[in-house]
Image (cartoon, rainbow, N blue to C red; front, side):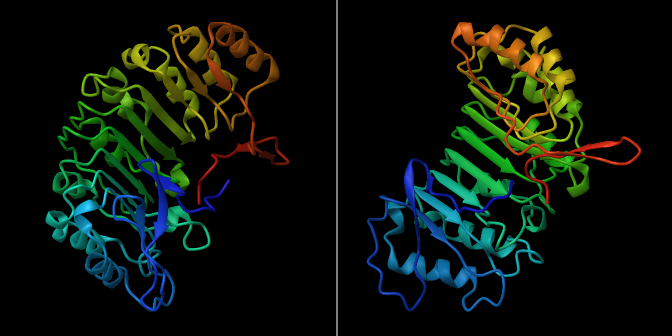
Length: 318
């Protein structure tokens, strides 16, 4: 699987790409859409910061509720420090901003693990009223532990998440957070965390409002599943998502052998390497209780060497 489509919506608002300098497009009301500000990765005619300056001049920014940061010039070689600086400089002009996504960049523009990032926690500190924050790209990504009282949804999409990022998220005080989505990825692209790094998240101590937990796209999905099986936070979840990774019968069996999951509304395990007997065990255990279970193998293919070595892959790596 690759990321081939830009975000269609954010904060429940349809995405609208702010037009180029020569376009005659009629602009919607400031609060009616999620504004996507973008440049070109290659040979940009207008840099992202210039497009954002035009946006701030053309739109009543006091009504803007959602912003999508698309491609910035040379994202494969340049981190978004100047983009973040521009956003923070404009924060007084964005009092209604509640949702921000940094790096809505698709495969044709830059592969997810080629997207250069930087420490993004300053955006949360600079926008204390944010309710949703998302970021895509793991190269150079940083996330320093923060305390944020308003954030309800946090998404970090990578092909390989640095352990420091996992630990930074885990050490953050996020009392309002309801939805956490981490794409842990693979060591081939910088994903060097271990299941133990997730322990503060799984304890739930700093996340009293958490209802939707996604720990996915992971090469260590079996270890994650085993850790989740006894995690205190699971008892108050409505959605548990362990999809997109290298989940095998070992991890799924550990999950079934742990605490009951019949209270969940949804268990998402799509893109997996489970046998049919194990899938049947999951269905027989959870579906009678009304749990919606996604066991679609999706595009989870595997390769085998001549020596019998089997290779399995996360959904989104490079």
